[in-house]
Every structure is written in C-alpha cells, then in structure tokens.
Length: 431
Image (tube, rainbow, N blue to C red; front, side, top):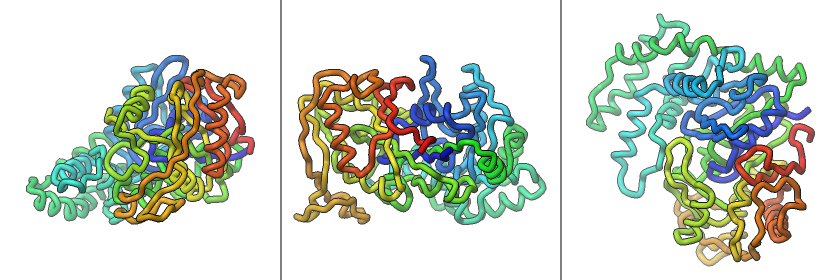
C-alpha cells in the first residue's frame, strides 16, 4: 500500500479538491502539510458543495482521520468558523476525526492587519496580490522564532512573555506604517477566548502518523496552492510564503521522506493564475474570456477572477522534475470542448534564444515569450466521460501530446466537477 502526496503542478486552482476527495475515499488518513486558510478546495459530493479553506478534504468523510500538520499556519478563528459552516451542512467534525499538530504556528488578527497594510502601501508594480489573510506575516514570525503555537494555548502562564516578544517586532512595524500600537492585553484576550475551542483537537501529529503508517494505513498528503507559488521554486517574489512542493509533505507533517511512495501532480488542461506576477501564456483576449467563463475561473477563497491562458508544458515539465511527480491528474479537459484549435507552449524565447525552462530571475521571467505548437481541436464533448472510448480522438491526441511534453503519464483524467466523472489509469495507492 502506498502513501500519496498530491501537489498542484501550476499556480494552484488546478482542481485539487475533487481529486483529493476522490482519493480520500481510498485513504485512511488525510494530511494538510502547508499553507493556511488562503487555499480553497471545492468538493462536490452527491450534488452537495463543500468549500474548504483550512480543513483537510477528508473531514467530510466520517471514517477518515484528518490532520493539520506543523507546516500549516493556523488561524484559530477561521478554524472555528469553518467548523460551524460544516456543522450547518450536517458535518460534525470531532476531535476523534481531526488532529492539529501541537507545534503549528498561529495566525493572529495582527498578522492579517499587517498583510493588508503592506499591500495597501506597496508601490505600483510591487504588490504581491496576497489574500490579505496574514499567511506571510505568520510564516515570518515562525521563522523569526517569535510565533505563538497551538501548544502555547495550553500554557496560559507563558503567554504574556511570548506576546511581549511578538509585539516587540510588530509594534515598530505598525508605527512605521502610521498605525497605532497593539495592546498586549488585547492579544492575550484574543488567544484565551479561542483556546478551549482549539485545544481538544491538539495532538502529537508526528506520533499519530508514525503509528498509522506502521499499522499499514494509507496516508494522503494534501498540498495547497501550486508548485509555481513555492517560496523557493516559484515565480518569486509573486509566490506564497511556504514550500508547496512535494518534499514539504515530510517536513510539514513529521514523517520521514521514505514514507512517501507516490507523488501525484494535479494539472489543469490549460493554465490559470490568481494575483500578480509573470504568466507567459496568458490570453488577454477572447480565448482568455472563453476559458474563464467556461471553466468558472474564480477563486474559491477570494472570488477573484483568474487569469487564463494556454497550457504551458515548460512550467509543468519543471514541476514534474522538482516534485518527483510520478503521474498527473489532468483536470478540466472539457473546458476545451468546441475550440477549432488549441495551442500548447513547448518552449520560451528569451533574448533571442529558445530555452526549455523557466528562468529564476524576475526580470528574465517577465521577458520570456512562449513558443507554441498548434493542435486541432475537437467538436465532440469530453464532459462526463468515464472511459477513453468516450473521448473524441483529437482529445485523446491532446492528452497524449501533453504526456510526451511533460515527461509524466496521466494517472487520472477528470472530465467534470463530479467525482465519479473520472477516468482511472493508475491508482496511486496501488503503485
């Protein structure tokens, strides 16, 4: 039995929610290992829609154990709100079904305030396009060794000193931005008011996972965002504040890398991104509008309209290498139904030279121009297909060409938001 890591191979929004839910039925444990409540997953189960931001996708299934790992930054207020929202949909998430790593860093209201103040004060052309939910500042405090963690809520006597250390950093920042300083008592009250709602879920996650792994249970590691938003390997500085690649699954949950058997890269049949930053294949024209409208390309968390463009094989091929992706789950193929022709980016032109990778330099990323191959489209429909025989011949040709370009096979093919509209080629848990 294999343990599987699911990562986005583009800029996020690849349709991970459906695929993770589809896989979670086969898993025993589902783990979130990075990010925060800036990531959105939409699950459609028996016609019922669940929109999750912080909680692992497994929480909607009673028989699964869900885990929030130490690589996540955890907003306790968003957590409580999400539990209440699910309760209103008939899903009761108990401490037996959900564990939060005791060493997970907290997102406080001051982090969200700082995030939004920085974006508001950023000079033109320097905005990152964050969600304003405090993810970046919380990770900064974690790395700066001044974060307040979940375990600290269980030891209230130590909180005043920890808050003083935290505000010794934040209050000068606020003064510099022309904002009033924070009162330590207000921060303490914020923490103590939510402690009893969070602490029942706290556990030694590394031990839980080790016990489950030794018992032979299947573990599904669920990433947020996408490879091109990784703090090291993405389009820096227009990235998120954590490592989104598959290697983070081990560090962000407390298992050894040897516990990971299969990496599945979720890959959209075209390309989208939200926020600022380079996007070589972006189509600011009728094609971009067509993809956005047909694909319902709006952010789950923010509702922001996604930028849309042709499939970029250069980026995905690089993501395959960086993550060690064994197979991809190709999503939203049906969005391309009816196009006369479909373009695929097979390389970049940079300063007169054709290259087959995304350069690390921000300046070079802004200058690359896509080199396209044009394929014939198809008039038939792929929507709802559940076998290769249901697909138009040109659609199959498109999928095979993508496999060739990126150097990874299609393990799953998704043909609609419904979880059963999935063509299984390789079961990652049986690899």
